[in-house]
Length: 484
Ligand code: SAH
Ligand code: SF4
Ligand code: F3S
Image (cartoon, rainbow, N blue to C red; front, top):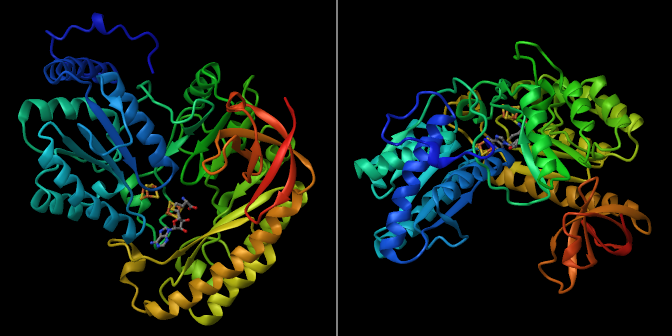
């Protein structure tokens, strides 16, 4: 955010400035006065609750939205009995949409009891015209609707809602620019997501993301490095660089930069201890990236490399631009360069036209790669994507049977693979108090595996050497060897 923004300097008698982010700071100040007045009348602080669905991009967006709400004067709560409730939605699969509609009914009952309550909806689902129509018609109690391209405008939209006293809808088809320097409220003091790019140009035939997140746009390296430096100065030791396909980072910049070059720059930032990134498309993962990963101790030994299917025929239909053989060769190359790397993946079962033979190819990839973990999804038809128009959709019972077989095998392998470091000492970033065991902490190894170990909460945010006593399938039980 702009450091030391002096709100007293903002002249609210003047019309709002045209340029960003000054315009939003003007509206933040306008809303702040409104919230202060309301809170004085009620004799209590106004509370805001943000609920996030979907991926890390959405989580990071929610931190930005909460940052704005806190500047406005709302206090944060996890409880939906709040004065401002914001749902940041996901639409990657149909289930995600159903959950939002279900919970909206519940919010309506809360709103009837609290006339001060405001409900806002944003995120990927709101980029779909049918969804917005349905909200306008059947969910009249919603106050603000906005999309993925204008989250920076929350204060302005809220102010409009205060003034107009009716539903405000502002959804943009695309993004003209990237607005930098707005407030952010991080969930963890010691780790943070950092957007390096927005949108996606891949158009995998099943996927709705390019339609709801727009065309690929990369942030300038100097803005990214500047943000990470400020985060480190504020206590962050681990960053997760975020993009739908980080391997195509930088292609559309005035002065093109590759993702490998960006990683090299980021790894030189003093005080930063761990660097993660999500997601890598197998299609354009470069040798340079493998070289940089192998040579920088700060870059975590973990690669999420979604395969989606093991059948080259289905991969072609999915528009993924690689074959089963190319994927397996890539995995070999990565493992040769970085033997201790942990590999994870995403797999879709039941893509239109998938036969038993195609599915067995997927099972074969799982056997050969032996992933640390795999997210498995049942194909979900998304309106407007090319796959939704394909005729030979696979019957539900067949998909379910394949899904169960895949999941069982993925879990068996994962339990075998994840325990490989047992009885060694590993660096673990202590993240939070263990939710089940009193006096224990939960942390993560460099390769993303979870470790539970006895320790004091003063260790949270620090990297400790932990002896891994016992493997329990997906996680370890350990004890402190010593603190770094
Ligand atoms: N950009 C990332 C993925 C983002 S979506 C990538 O390309 O790897 C996360 C995962 O959701 C995808 O990897 C895919 O496995 C799954 N997914 C996307 N669309 C889907 C659909 N229509 N049905 C089922 N799963 C889907
Ligand atoms: Fe979707 Fe493919 Fe883009 Fe990932 S790369 S977000 S799966 S279109
Ligand atoms: Fe969902 Fe949007 Fe992420 S559709 S998976 S929240 S980019």
